[in-house]
Image (cartoon, rainbow, N blue to C red; front, side):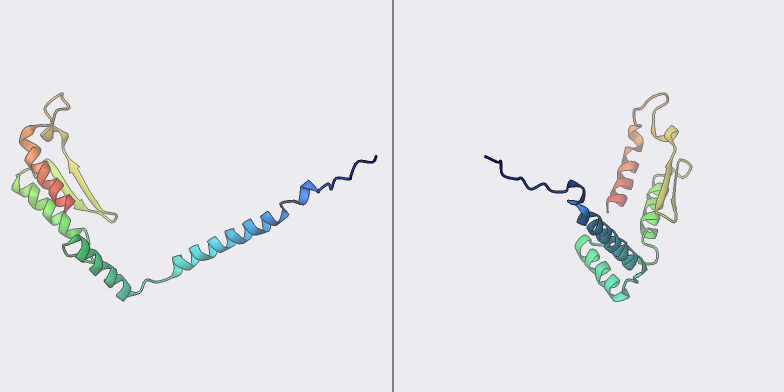
Length: 130
């Protein structure tokens, strides 16, 4: 008896459609990235989002300088605790930069925090948290 013929499939071209599909998905991804990159946000939509965030999280948001209020509050804490020489707070292009002197906040030759400076650090943390 002759064995039945088995259908042999050409393994080389089984997934040939996959390259076309991958190219199409890549082109769509590039299209949407460019589309989002060149789109301009609508001012009223941006205002609605800002108002929603303000209602949800509280406080007011100044759109021109969002970090300016935090910087002023941090500088007020520094002035209140009279550590102007040891702490500097500045607004940069990307956010807020704080420089804290380790000599003023740690005991000499130790990693232990000076307990007298803890209230000032807690006040600064409260400002940042709010």
